[in-house]
Every structure is written in C-alpha cells, then in structure tokens.
Image (cartoon, rainbow, N blue to C red; front, side, top):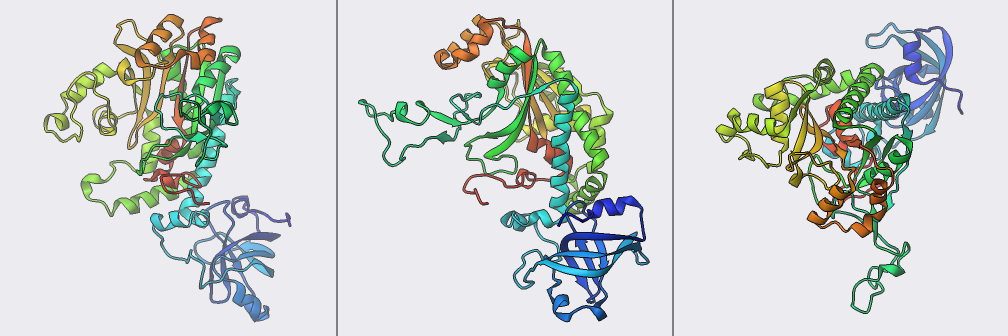
Length: 478
C-alpha cells in the first residue's frame, strides 16, 4: 500500500518519463478522461489521464468527486495549460467510492459557515488544506525555536486543582453522579470522596506549573491544550485552545520581551519559507473576501504584506502610561469614534485601542509594558512605583494582543501581600510559594495563544477556522 509518491513531491521533483503510483481523492473528472487528483500534500492537483476507450465503463462510473483512487502510470510533461506534468494512467483502482448524489463537497464555492458544519470533510478543501498545513508548520517552528535555544519541553497537567488566572471560568472534572453527589454534614458537595479527593478542573494555563520547572531547569516551555468555560460565542473565543507558555529563570522583563519578539519573527519567517504556496493562496482568498466589504473596512495590507510588516520592523516598546496619553489625545477618541472611550489612566485597553496603536499611530507591532496592577494577575512583579506591574503585551495588526506575559514576582512577602489583597488562598498554592521560599530568583514568562498566531498567519477571520475541531458553547461535534 505504501508504494506511492505524494503529489507535492512529484510536482517539485522536475522529473518526467518515470513510472509512478499516486493516491488521493478525486476533485473533478472531465470528459471521462481527465482526473484532477489531490492528496492533501499541496493545494495543487495532479492531472491523471485515463485511457477511457480501454477502461471498463463500470470503473469509469465510479470515478466521482470525493472518491479515493490509486493510479499507476508514467509521469510525463503536460501539453495542456495549468500543469507542468501529468500522469498517463495504465491502471486505476477505486479505493473508496463516493456517491455523487450525497457527497457534500461538490466542485463549487462553499461558505465557511457551511464548511464548519461538515468539519469532518473540510480538510479536503483548498482553504482548509492550506490553513492546517500552515498550522502544522507553525507548531513545528515553535518547537524548533525553543529546542535550538536549549529549552526543555515540559508537559504540564491538563487536570489541575488551580485556576491560574483566578477567572473562575473552569470546566470541572469529577466522577460523581452529578444528579446525586455525596454531601457533607453542612450540605455542601463532599469533594473528599471524589476521584482526586478534592475539587479539580481542566487547566486554564500551564504557567504556574511551568514556573516550577523553570525553578530547577532554568528554561522550559509548555505547548498544549487549555480550557475556558467562558460563554462567548464570538469569532475570537474557543472553549478549548492551545497555548505556548515559556518560563525562564534569571530573565527580567526586557529579556522576556526580547524572547517573545524573536519567537514571533522566527515562526512567521519559517511559515513564509515552508508554506509559500499556501500563504499565496490564502492571500488571494483574503483579497477576494475583502472585495465584499465596504472600502473603509478593507485592510490596508495584503496578508503577505502584513506578515512582512511584522518582520521588517523592530517592535515599538512603550509603557501603558505612554499609550494612554496617545490614545486619550487621538482623533478617534476625541471624536468619540472608539466604541470604548479612553477616559484616563486605569482604563483596560480594548482591541480597538490596541489596533489603533499598531496600525495607525506607530505602523509597526507594539510591546506595551508596565500596566496598572489592578487590571493584571497576582503573580506579576510589582514595580517600585507601587501602581504598576512588570507586565507586557505584544500587539499585532488586525488582531490586537497576541502575547501576554510578565516578569514574575519572586519576592515572597510581596507575592503573599498581593494574594491577600485580592483574596487568593495561600494554603492552596503552598507549592507555588515554596519556589519563593527555597532559592527564589528573578524569572519571567509569557503566553502565546496558538490559534491567535495561526489566525494571524493565515488571514482567516474566525478562530473556529484555524483549529481542526472547534469547541465552543453548544458545540462539541466530532
């Protein structure tokens, strides 16, 4: 079965007059003679020419859109337009039939909404073939970036007892009969009888456990699924998504920002190099999609221009305070064009503010630092001014925040004080505090939402279209 050559390899080889076997799915079959065959290795199809006069008519009828076939023959230079080589088949074998009356993916344009409903088949389309090949490349590039720098890949738990963000939007894990859980004498659910002997949930972040690894191995990264039970039915939210979270001992806030900028430039460069055809296809797809929008809503840059824009510029670095001053004095704020007006210091920045800074004001990616401590998490290092923390967000065109991170608070007394201020029970995080009690040191880290990255690099508009099987409210199909 394995004696086949992938279509991508054949098209790139430059070879002709060789015997080959190709396998894939029929996109179209014209004139009982020309098969457009695709195997998912590339968006390009390979033309397979059938000797229909010497082929069983019953077999010809089974060569339908969606059918899986094997074709053996000679690879020759093509005389027709649109392809450099084609296969003159000597044998055709049907590996899997496809009823043309029932197959949902007919050779025509389908809406992304429709394809979301048949996510189990959308891998066979050009758009999703391109998206998921780019996703694969980006994932590989992330690992290669960290491995080249001596980082340890740490698998942090998916089932945990901590809510790292304190958001409370967690999926609970239990083996209780949920209709009749055991109760304590006071009538509360008795989690001591549960599988883990306590209340547990699916992880919202691997960060806290990642910090534990960094406190013994210096540089670690996690790359795995995280979960939020947030009832958000938007184009930017998923209930299950992947996070890249490095944690580095002996790093300060500047080192942290430098690493994040280097990572983003590395993986974008890698994708542009390895997936040139796919990104060119997605650029054209986006141009066609933008034609349907009013002029003022169209992007000023093509997809490839946007990616190169992030590579060509050093990211602009400024403090939250400086950003607030710019936004407060900006034309859209003065003319009340922002949906959320910037009143002053302490405002929690929205996507529209972040995009204004990147796309209109600086015209380059932006790293914002030193946010008010009230709008950031408890573990971020407190600055000497008593008002801000050593946080950083990286803002990208068209998407807003793509990375969030900080130098972590390594001083035990300051960390405990902050936990007390916002009501985080210290006894539940005793293990986290131990890393400050025993050999604590300056350290930092950040989180990069992988789907946000894939969304940016592919130019797709909905986050549900860059993860193979999206999970969101009222949907856990497949």
